[in-house]
Length: 301
Image (cartoon, rainbow, N blue to C red; front, side, top):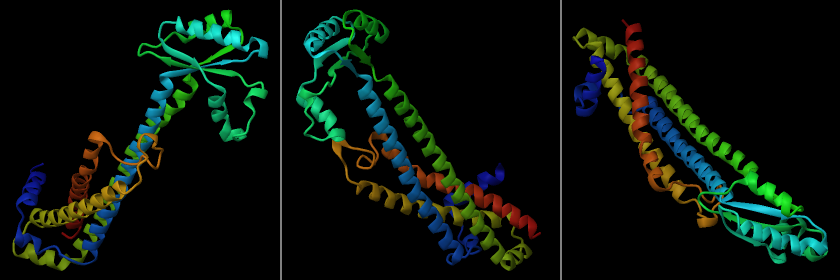
């Protein structure tokens, strides 16, 4: 614990003499910067995709939760009467804000993606659809189904529960996928920084031996490596995060009609999340380098 606190203090104030122990350039420096930057860039997109997909699923679920559909299948001579009876029943139902029968043009527009715009709705036995909007309190679907069954035999209520359930599950799983992706990215950063730290320590074995001869402790040497690699990871992650945010901002926006890809981005407080990526990358690099330095220095004793 004391060693960790000393390392954190050294990370903040710096030590020019200790910094000379770690080569400022070379393969390990480029590897650390590139790995941190690339992983931060991917982390921004993983978060943006996860949040956008979850937001889209939640919006669709909310829209479905506030609306229902009554489908009336009846002979042509009874369709108007059953539609009027269903509308009267719905208007008298507590929890129903409004109910209206869709026109032929609206029903034709709903069927056009599957059957084309020239579908003769008026000549086909197409059921009459009634759009139902709920109040905030909602209605009792079981009770409404029983009343419709008794008074309007050809009516079937669809409260969209079967559509809302998979959307809610999708939102939860996509959120989980985002956290799993973030964990995998953090693990990849840790692995790459560990490899780079091991390579730097092995390459400077002779320098480390000389430092020990002049009285430098392993903690002093480890702090130098931890500080340099943590700062490299912070710089690389900051650059990768900035590029990722710019790339997300350049994605097209669909406004209120945004789909999965056109709605990609951050909204509200979610913009804080990319700013957390560089500190997290630095923390991963700090822990990975500290462990690698202790193990390698112990092996060089």
